[in-house]
Length: 122
Image (tube, rainbow, N blue to C red):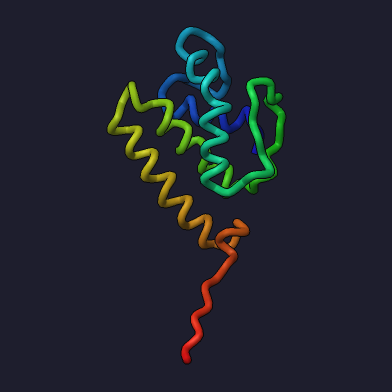
């Protein structure tokens, strides 16, 4: 999944975009400017330290995080960026992110999720 895909899906979730193409205008620019930072927060929560987004990251950047993990990023980003516009919808997106994150980490897709606790009885 590319950085462009993540930005596009996030804007679509926030109803800041109609269609399948990012248009940089007065509606989208404040969100687009904040996206690298919120994306990095989401990556950190997914323990995806190999990816780092900056304001100059090209749109065709391919995430090292697999698609199942990357698909969660727009939920997190929309939850953070949309708080001032619609707190209820932002909360729904955050809850969906947290449920997806938990399933992702437990699925073994993540190194964190692959760890298992072993209890010894003595």
